[in-house]
Length: 116
Length: 110
Image (cartoon, rainbow over all chains, first blue to last red; front, side):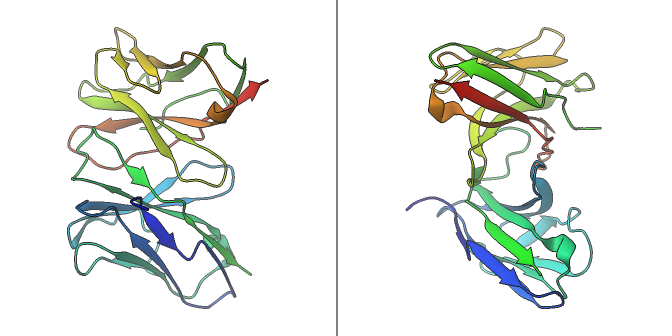
């Protein structure tokens, strides 16, 4: 389809392992966002890309989390030395440009990460 | 705090209008108000947004108080498919971080 695609949809891993989550935004969308959603909570901002560069990574919880978008399209969220507290749904969203206060974000269905 | 205040849950009968309130008493003059909804096992979906004037689209209406300290999302005829968590978000002009609260869980009764 033409929406935001996230893979894998489900990932189960063991504590201490490395994980990569992929986001394929809507074609032509220059802005890309990662959010994390814990059970019963609203989504929590992690990082925002405008093009290839991370314009704001202030939501990344610590240096175990890193995200890239090398060609300005697909993005990968990388989590090192996973902990049980990292278990959540990781949501990706894109928009045609920076929303700059207004405008619409298009979200994917998320990648559910479970750390045992 | 940029988070808004919403009731935890609301119920509505099918085919009746629903008014979902949101309090954003610390809003500044250039902050937008957005509404998203999230169905089970899906990502949030855009509903509507506005700045000062009331807004209408095919999904809903957004009524913004004159002092902008509160707003109401109006679903004109609730259907079972409208059962979701509704998030009211404020975002400052020039920023791109949407701060979600815990939202209102809307239950629609047949």
